[in-house]
Image 1: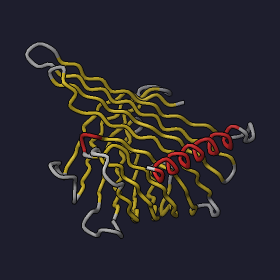
Image 2 (image 1 turned 60 degrees about the horizontal axis):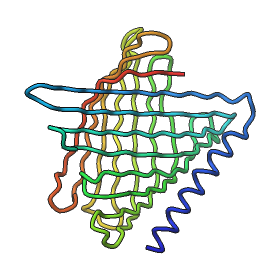
Image 3 (image 1 turned 60 degrees about the vertical axis):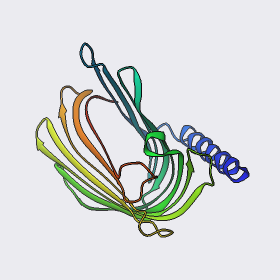
Image 4 (image 1 turned 135 degrees about the vertical axis):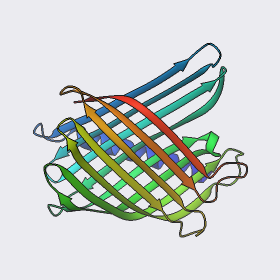
Length: 244
């Protein structure tokens, strides 16, 4: 319990330091924000409600990029809660070369339907852009992750050292249509069988300078999930995006 409180305090300090540093930067910085919302409400013979909200923000100053992102997903079936998960992350990138940089970040996840109450992830790694043009980009990231997972039954926290390999491809298919695919592999150095794989293909249709429509399929795989839980999670969304 004492370790958990220290870790929580560390996470909050990390949040405040990142926010204070970003706010205090030069007015010449570039700020970008992409926010999305997806709502599905069905009544009558089928009573189903799902809500998904996401926000991705970045603040660029010369070679430094400060990022903040969060998401929340909630679902009800016949007035009974059937899904609820959220995540919030902060990350700092420093590009010491035009196509190569390093990153450090903190990600907090919660998903009791997947068998855990909280998961705290501390990341450190490198990024590299292998290809970039006006119509396409291919980049990869590789790093280390220290994860602390708090089970639902209040048993001892699970602590793991993991790796992280991430690749992302984006391509402009038409003037108003962009495709994107990313995949993330998280090997577990503490327990080799307990690895994770996440991936998401998506299409974005530009409607106006500010608004777009996005269809995406998020797939998550946990090779050793908590007892009684499935190895697979997936979520299909059709969302309205707002870019600022």
